[in-house]
Image (cartoon, rainbow, N blue to C red; front, top):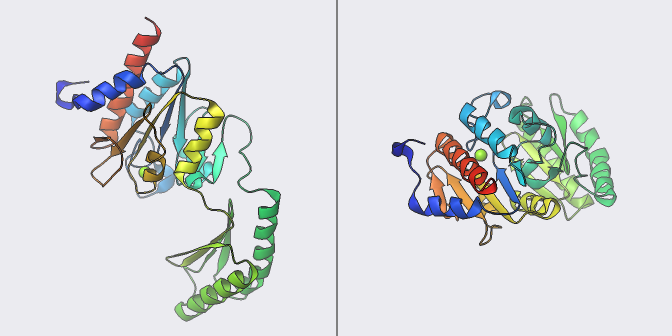
Length: 264
Ligand SMILES: [Mg+2]
């Protein structure tokens, strides 16, 4: 680390304390935190110096590196390019993979049946509209109307919403641009991070993220943990760095200090 990007004193002290945790989880958002934002989501990659720092952390005993993202698990595994035993949280906490095995089921059998019933009821409405299609999601599905003529798209979205809410009053319904999404379960990155913390049995957590949805994870942190906001947006995190390059420097510094403590 060069003098120019020396750590702020408070972050320096927090890193020193965190480096000594008996069992440490380093859980990180991906886009905007490890990887610069790019136009094609599947071509995003962690900065080379971030990848090197993650590898250095992974090589240490009692040190777990995990990714926590809004991406689907599949997309996150693709862009993350980490070994298959890396714990991953996708879809803002709905999808969790603790290790190299299969992901945890996103919904239980009863909720799966709610999704299937709803999908079967809405599929004929969608099939009747030229260009509309259904995308399956971990806890529901999305009806896409991007290439549908405007009036037909509005009518389909309205009909689908009405049909859905008459069948299942507990649904979460989200309107997006040219898409309406139906889900039987809601989750946040905070839920995902809680699962990682409990199931991996760690003593302390470093979490870093750049986006609004990362705040849910930052809010779950306690006294022994360390939260870092990447970028200038408002945050509950106690510490802040400017960009993914500065975040990579923090991770590299953590690896150096933890190696020093563990080998002492
Ligand atoms: Mg991000």
